[in-house]
Image (cartoon, rainbow, N blue to C red):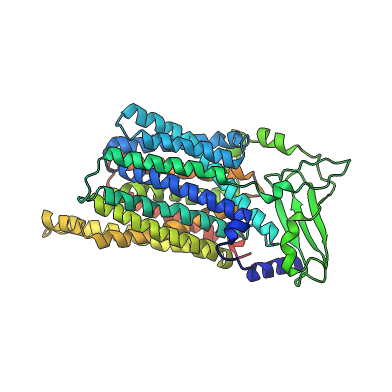
Length: 512
């Protein structure tokens, strides 16, 4: 109990440095580079995706093909991703985005659908590797500063999604200028510009540094060998005295095979000011409960489709499936159904740019805030923000439908009230930021003892992508607007209620 209290105290008293910390801290540098890479990649792809849903059925169908491929790929992607470091997995996966964006330069239906299917596989590799990578950044940072396990997931996910969602502001801002009546630029030129931006994003992954912890090789006893690389199922437990001066600090690394390493004897010489060197302390391996396994080989053989599917019957996964489905459905609504309602291209891209600005700002704020006040209060924000949008659109469409006095000109005038779309876009940004930052944190907090991180992220993306298939298909077949609103609102309620009812979710959602 005293260990928990002292690590909680460390969390409350922990402060981050200025912007220079991104150059000094390997974990924050890597998270920043990963975030910038995604920002550039999705500045290109996100804008093309938004435009695809409003230029005819082929665009929406290509996105549906993309997400079918992405959904299926998530079943076996943990196997493939285990053969590659996250850095190169993200590099290879993101390269397929270049192919899809470039296929729009010259209209060819077969090329568009083929690159969409290829990108689905690459996107699965990219997002599984990203989830593992950002989680690794959070784990290493918490270990270095003797903070509670999982206590930094909100901050690092918030940092990532702040940069990531800012792509909507920049990409759609560029698109709004390019399609404005003041500039006469062909769509071919637009797609060439976005392909070039995509290539720049892929190149960013080269600048990711090796993590500091990989370089620290623990001392291994002759009777029990353990590889130097950290196992994906590692948990860090920090025990320390509240003043960090009187007693030793012990960092215990627990592995899924029962073995654990202890970095002890950080004695009085390690005061609060230099406690950050905890990662460089020598490790002594304790006798495991089971025979040791080779980390490298286990990463390549223990993952399989059955392992991913087997998680579907666990209580934790069943609690989170509705949230994942809603996340996918809301993404399809934001990028497919919502822009489809805006007939003017300038207003369409401007509204999505507003969405990106609000989403980026709230992502960073919600991420850090959730580490301090808990996950569920932030999830409640998504319920209120998105619920308000669905209710507003439903009432709005009902009034127009039943108001016989409105002429076609009146309806057309209402359609072009730019402030309506901007306010709705802002609400969508707030709700999306709350959902994205907390969903990843909830998955990793609830299921870290059940599976490898890549399996956890693959499950999240599987259910999210599964829902996005229907979302983009509904956009392509022009599903009735009121049905779209009711289905999104119903899934939102169905996703939120289990989280608040479950004691387990409330426990892991509480501030560390």
